[in-house]
Each structure stands twice: as C-alpha cells, then as structure tokens.
Length: 134
Image (cartoon, rainbow, N blue to C red):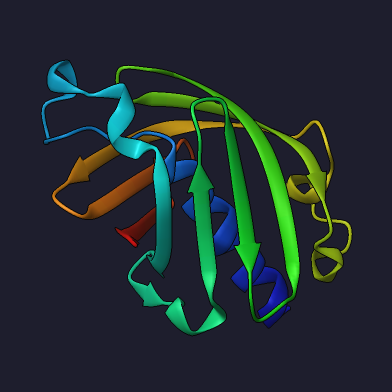
C-alpha cells in the first residue's frame, strides 16, 4: 500500500510539471520554460526526493523516471497557457499493480506554475507536486 501511495504521488508530480509558467500569472506563461529536467521534491508536502524521481520534458513528451523503482513512464502532453493534459504512452513501472494511472492511455489534466527554478503542478484532483530544475 505504501508503494502504491508513493507511485500515485509521483504520477501526480508528473502532471504538475506539465503546467509551468514564468510567474504566478498564467497570462505570462512561456511555453519553453517547462522544457528540461526537473527533480521531483514533494507531493502534497511530503518529501519524496529520496525516490529519485525525474521529469524530462520536451515540447510534446514527458519521461518520468524513478531511481528507487528502476522504472520509467512516457507521456504525451499538450498545454494551453498553464493548463495541461497528459496521456500515458508506456510504462515499465510494475510496482503500481492495477492502478489505472499505470495503464497506457490513462489521461490526466491539471495546471502548472514555474517560479524561478521551481515547478509546481496541481492535478485536477488536488494533488500538488513541487519540482526543482536540474
């Protein structure tokens, strides 16, 4: 159960990363500022940095990797200002078992904000993930 919760928090973190902007004003969003690598720090205020979660974001794809679990997820994504939609394309993360978020085709939405070197992702269900640019 604990691993399932950690994985859920990690997935939520990924969704948050997709929705970054230069400041707290979505109207000033810069589509390029989320591109790059981000270290996942917290989910809902819980430090999960020791799991070694990384988001590698390109213009149309997010690769989520976890050192602790030796697994990777690949998402396609679209964004509009500071809102995003992701679709899971593939996963090697077997520790999630029957979690629907681990099934290719899983779709998630949310918002993001980039402030300095921090990315905050808020999933539509309220989970908040904070990342740091690396």
